[in-house]
Length: 423
Image (cartoon, rainbow, N blue to C red; front, side):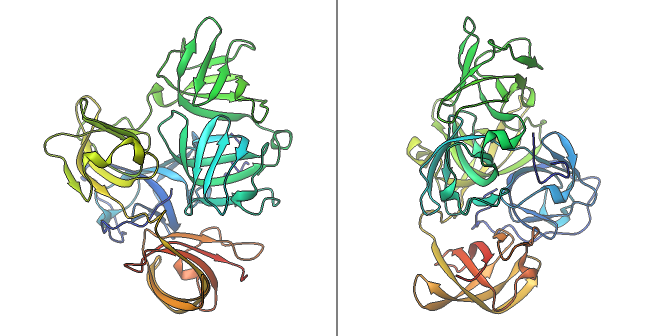
């Protein structure tokens, strides 16, 4: 794994459920809590509207010890710590990408669309964070077949990923100089041919043969990671050098009994009325008679809304390790119906690290201005100049800066703010 954010080499979309700013000291007696979401900003680490101090946190990046500097806006992370935002000293933060591999094709235009990466269908929207490590790829639209990318996002391991962050690692595999890797749930296993599928990708583990790490045999429904040293863009087939068990072979967080759990993300598995379950990101959720729905019903959790319905689930794990939902709420992501503007900042008032108000006098879509509010949920990104601020937050913004904003026209709340060079 070659991750440049390490020294060696998550669509936190705007929420309408009102999680407030956090900070302060912790408590030794609080209930264990796990939160899964996307990093929206820094000045501490902001996830799901909460500010998490990281001074005493254990940070895991792809199975290796890291620091806050190894994390980026758009990364989907798992945060352990207190059960409320009033005492948000994180005890642990874990990051792992969804996919790192070769692009097969790209049908993204104007920052919206899909691309295929090693047989996995990747959805890109306005709020996907884009980074280029090579200095040669201007926008996500310009990613080409053969480029090597790292993707963080929402997926349930069956070949469909909603990207929260895409980073171009190399313009071809020869320049990348490391293994490529794909994670997912094994399907179509053929023991005779020693092949299986992850999404649309056929993985051959017998020709070399591949090293099996952490498992004695491969079977359908196991959650694994397959690595390879070579892949031809568009081939949808690779020879694995290593196949290893991922997260003990089960996708999603494996919680302890009574552990509190919060997750925000996309609907990834439709509601099954018989089993009373649905999927959000990589997590399966059980609904019971006490589950409260806010702004949404089980009928909305249908296959037509897969990958587009953004929501929040809060609940607890039962004795069988299953997440039982206490609350299911619709989140206001405005991916498809939000407003967008580019223009100059004025009247900036910062009330906290990532809280405040500003006016944007825009030149796009037309002349005018709008008064906006930034919250802990606003995704904050800096693309100004040759050396953008990597830990950008509202305190770095100044009157006169040029920004691109995505916002909720009804409330004026900013969903994503990116400072850039003036056009």
